[in-house]
Image (cartoon, rainbow, N blue to C red; front, side):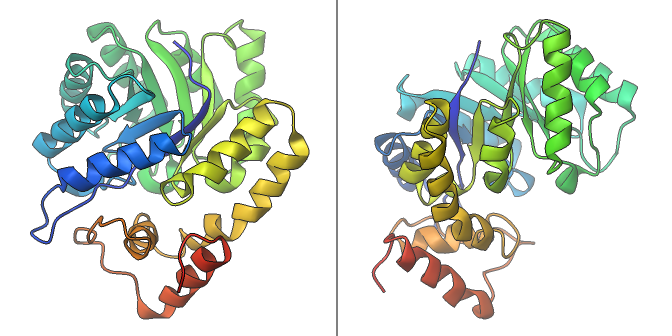
Length: 299
């Protein structure tokens, strides 16, 4: 199973009582689909997976699949630093009929490379579902080597990776290894960093799992589609059009700035959960200015 294009790492809307805001989530799903995205991810890092419990995580996956109703590709955030917990979440994703399970490398316990391989092998062998690896060393303290990625890519259910190591050369090395081992048609690479989407696509990535697309899904999708269709100039122009937004949405810990931006845009996604705190006052104007420049708000 393959994926190309723009997938959105969706925020999780909360009510004033700090509960999942289902109405807002369903509204955002439709807003993103209407603006041309190809896929949606629920319960990922941007969805505050670190502070939602497993029952909430499963509910987010269920809502996603139900509301999407086959219109775009669905990714279920289903990773954990416990292999048994990850297995449970991937099983739920399969039962919910999500298209892919996104499985982050275990965090905090910093497994060795052979431990990572066994972690994914057990999941692969236990559940018949397309699995996308998620490598984000800035969050987990673990950076899967190219050699380990290649070994895991040979597992029958593992079909891709969201690569958030900012080293473009690493993606080049991954893709070259896939070519050399006749795996490039079986295993896809997606950028995990908005500002590196075009550079990574130039060396083999097929798209992005995007934070920026929460706020500007139309232009993000157009950027990726333009590159896919060979219109490099338009893709580059859109990259620079979105560049300030790519930076300002990470001016503080993700998804704090993104939720602030969406609330400004009239999309009620609520606050972040502790230990994340509200956006600091000193950065509010930066986000307002950026949204105004892109015509996303009138202030």
